[in-house]
Image (cartoon, rainbow, N blue to C red; front, side, top):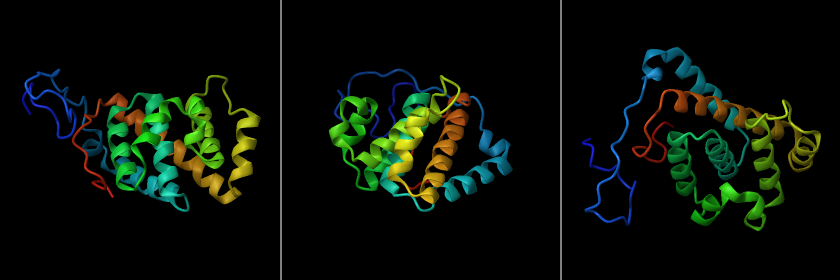
Length: 176
């Protein structure tokens, strides 16, 4: 890709004559260089998703990726959420979910709040009230899966951000 080309869908609706910033290159092709780790992460991710509502899972992955500034994962999970039938409006409002609570169910809000608490461990722990709210909306097995899913997306985000994986080229379901 040349410096003035844009990824498919990256600038939909933008002026076609406008030149965009050049696309950066990834720092490291970690998945190719550490294939056993990559394969283990894929298996862990698959296991963590079992029993979770797919749309809820995508909301959680998008929110964690927003917090971690992982553009690659944002691209992937936004596209997967749309493909799963999630609305553009709910995805857009996710970055301001606390001011847009009426877009989400109480169960989704509890999951999003738990995602933030696990992702941003500012206080060094997940507050009891956040955990208790999630526990009220999820059966224990489902809560365990949700915690696993949040933990796994945080790991993926760290690979993506550290290796500067390039967003804009993912197609829904590409890695499934």
